[in-house]
Image (cartoon, rainbow, N blue to C red; front, side):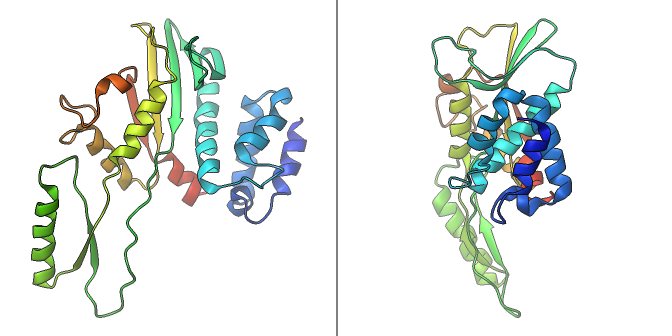
Length: 252
C-alpha cells in the first residue's frame, strides 16, 4: 500500500471517525508518521486493525487514541539515532505477548510499552447562576480511614456554604493495570543491559500529578509498601508520565 492509498482511505473516513474530526493538518501528520514507520506490506493490515479504516464497524475513540499515542512515540523514536528498531516484538521467548517498540542504543536494549490508562472522571451536576460551585474530593494515595476524613471535610465545606462536594475516584487501579500489563511483555531475563519503559499517555496535564501521586503517595506503587505486590511489575524500570493522549483528543 502506497502513501497515496493511505491518504485516500483517511480522506474517505466517515464523520464519526476521529481522523475526520481532526482536520487536514492532523491527518497529514498521521499519514506521514504512519507511512514512515510501517512498511508497505504491513500498512493495510495495521490501518484496519489499529486505526479502523476503511472498515469502521469496530471503531472507538478509546482504542484509536491508544493506537495514535503509540504511533506518535514510535515515530519519534524511529527518527532518532538508534539501531535494531522493531515494532510489536516478542522480547520474552516464553510469552505470546509483544512490546510496542524495541530498539538498541549503544549497548542497551530498550523495550517500550505505551499505555493510555482509564481516566474516567466523576460527572458533576450542572450548576446554575447564584448557586454554590461543586467540588470533587479524592485522596492522593491510600489513606487509612479516608471515608470518614473525606466525609468530615465535606460537611465542613458544605456547612460553610462555600461549595457542594462530591467524592471523586482514585484511579490508582488503572495505573496498576498498566504496570502489570507492561511487565508481562518485558523479558524476565532483563539485566543491566536492558531498559524497560512504560510510557503513560494521559489526558489533561493535571492528571499527571494524580498518576505521580499514585506512584509515590502512601501505598503508591513505587513506595516501600505498595498497595499491590511489586513483584508483579518489577521488570518496569522507568515510567514516563505524559499528556500525549490529550494532544490527540483536544489540540489536534
